[in-house]
Length: 172
Image 1: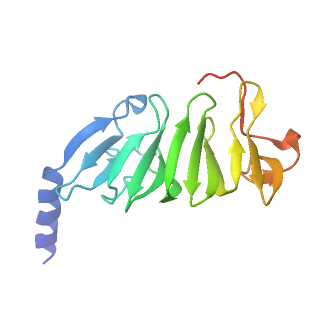
Image 2: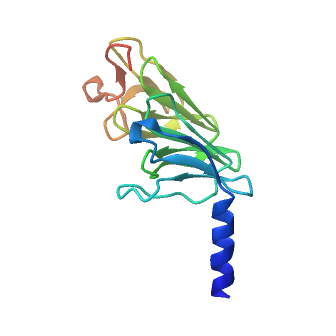
Image 3: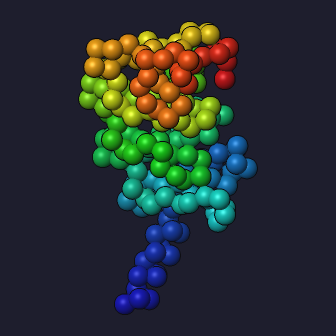
């Protein structure tokens, strides 16, 4: 029985198609698709990385030159690091990158969350709405009727000095 499982795994792996790689990591991270049409992020044995299972309906980079991936599983979106770590579980209804200010806006129901691509900070989807920053501005959020900011831990704060999500010069 053990040999049967081994040969099935080998057969499945031989049918995998490499769709594209991540040039930032010298093509060692690649998105692969199995015979069932599911996707995974694979690293060809890189020590600092963890292969994902074939569970995703799709995988694509957040943006060219940005070292994170948007993944879709059962119609919900999440975010993986370039080393295969789950940063945001597949619970979001929508995820969109705002390239002007390096912020990824995530939506879960009527709540908003944020992901900062410059350092990987995650603010959970608990905010009612936002005003995206312009150059030199902070991300302004609203929670429970209060206006505030997101701190370096992804939490709500009314203190503008604690704001972590901002646009300093408008470039990537």
